[in-house]
Image (cartoon, rainbow over all chains, first blue to last red; front, side):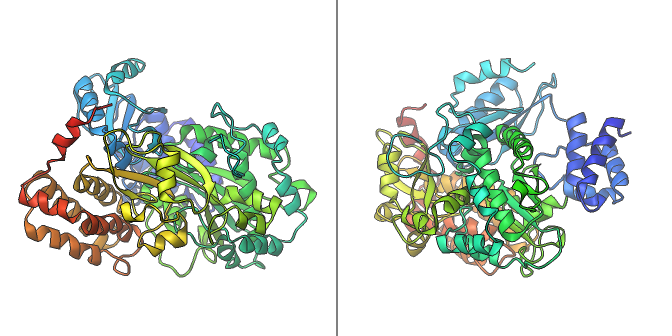
Length: 154
Length: 435
């Protein structure tokens, strides 16, 4: 069931656009904000609320890199894997993260703390390599800094 | 961004600490004076001024901004839309972030001027998800501009009304293509649209719409304040204005700088980026993001403007240079780029959806030692099959630009990988001190 708060926020998004369907992405963002990911059940409810089919909404949800259709950890780690970070050695950053967390791309730690994902260019190429943890950007990274960074997130 | 007497209208007032200019600080350095001027002009006068200034779009295509605006029908009922394309996602590009984080009011003033010129009633900043600081600063700045009477109803008692909204995307390179961006704003998959109709006539929700890049919009207040001739004189070449150039890769001082349009690639690398890191040699560079053809040593004295870079077979693109050094494998470099394009293809048209993963696979096998001599010819043929005219939008042709030029300039490397069954750069890389 969509919560009262979610419905209120989705209504607000709908009020900004000419027809309900146009609020699809905003509605998915709202549900993800409250629940960390968009389950099949949530997807069906949002689709019903926007008066479109669940399949149509899913085609939108699965198009975008950062709408999660599977459960994710409490903190999302995005490793920039684009060209400047590749040149500056992002592969070592990724290897170290995998080693520290014991997970590969697309996986979540057993304690549910972190999900590790590759991400296209984070737009900070003069300070490569870079990652984001949640809303925080870390740049000019060295592998020996990663353990300390991860320890900030409970 | 400091330390020179050259004119840097867009960035000279940036704070040293990287924090954004507040509304008050922006007003103190002449902010919103251009808007006051514009409110006493006609939309046609503003369009003519910008057309005369020869401002070309800074998002990569380099199309005349004034000419783009002139296709918007003027005597039609509301709404019309103005959108700032802040979905900076071209790999190697980090220039618009500066404006979004540090001078949000300069962008907003530029957006109001552009909106007025086409008589838009609503405007959007389409911001990429990853720019968290920028999102907070823009929301705050929109609110401040409202409070000050620069946005909303009857702006500066002119009778002109404009609303502004922030839309943060959910991650997809395609959203940078203007028609795909419009689909995304309408809550759909970010597939590009067929043109015509062009967005200027039928854009967001079927209404006349202009999509302009952030840096382009930031030029507008200065053109209004100082005139078209002044803007043209800022440049060293026929393409007007200053440009935010950037350099990333293994140089001593990677960064971004506002410089006169038309500085050479050599000046960018050697003077501004401090030259190559010790022990490394320049091998090549993408002049303006992932979707531009390599330039090599013979091009170091090419002027970095739209016309001059095009004349040597590449594109200025976003003007943010990515450097390939002599200890980084060109095959691996291109493989990284093609992985990105294959992943970000929207899947709408077959050559792009099927061709790009195929190209990536071939590059992977060459890099890992499974390549055959005929694979290089297969890559050659893909640069034509996925080239201009064969796909629905510019994504795949853009993806072919670094590939076709790598096959031209670094062909020996491809052949050596096939002959020696793999990449020998990893040993070269180990010799260089790691960070």
